[in-house]
Image (cartoon, rainbow, N blue to C red; front, side):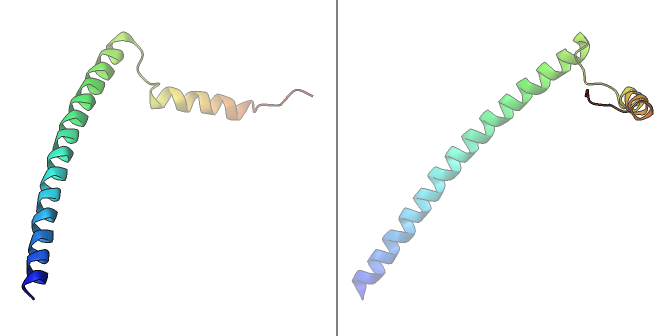
Length: 76
C-alpha cells in the first residue's frame, strides 16, 4: 500500500512540475506574440499615413452601386 501511495505522490509531483514548465513556456510565447502584434499594429499605423489604408466604406458602396447598374457580362 505504501508503494502505491509513493507512486501517486511521485505522479502528482511530476504533474505539477510539468504544469509549471508548460505555463512558463506559454507565458514566454504570449509575450513574444504580444511583441509581434505591437510591431504589426505600428506598421499598420504607418501604412495609413502612407496612403495604403483600406478603402472607406462609402467608396466601396459607391462602386457596388455602379456595378449593380451595369452588371458584368462575360465575353461570348
